[in-house]
Length: 245
Ligand SMILES: NC(=O)c1ccc[n+]([C@@H]2O[C@H](COP(=O)([O-])OP(=O)(O)OC[C@H]3O[C@@H](n4cnc5c(N)ncnc54)[C@H](O)[C@@H]3O)[C@@H](O)[C@H]2O)c1
Image (cartoon, rainbow, N blue to C red):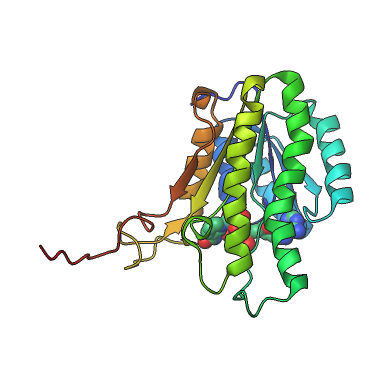
């Protein structure tokens, strides 16, 4: 895979998947522009990356606040000169059935998991249109494909992320910009045995990072509008199906 002098912006970069992603991009020499609300964690991680030779810059960005996004994005663009790859990774998955979720919580969960993707994609999409090149990759979830009882607002937001991805892929195709999403299943710190996936174990951040980096590579320019599950086969047919014929 090649990344010709590419730059990447990653939101929620201090988290499990964000950190794995930053490391994977760094291994390909991509310049890193990492954002989060947890600056202690982000800066500590960035220090480790920098010590291993990565070109890394950090920014406070609260993706639920337009003003925070605008000011951090302006700083990133000034420092980077150009942004080639955007990974909309920040998210959270609070519990709550449809009945239990208050209107306020509903709005907050949709704001963080969906509206943030719209806001960031607009800001950097405008810049990518000017340079006629871009890769936008959004974190959805298998909850956005199948639904996840007890995480209703999250499932709805992630389903909408997939449709935002498809629609923007069509809207931006003529500008040389691809837009894709990745839908992880359960991601943990280690490959833990699981009877919930066909592969028999849960995923780790690296599994998701490798899929995202593949979609971001120069060579992946003919792939747009897809959602790629990274779930050990979790959303395939039922495990141990019983056939009666
Ligand atoms: N871990 C999983 O099992 C899993 C499964 C499916 C999808 N996902 C999705 O992958 C993405 C990353 O998940 P993760 O497991 O790395 O989560 P994580 O909780 O480890 O990291 C999330 C990061 O987002 C940051 N964040 C939270 N609120 C923010 C805000 N308002 N503005 C900016 N940053 C904010 C947090 O500080 C944290 O660093 C999320 O979108 C999540 O929904 C994760």
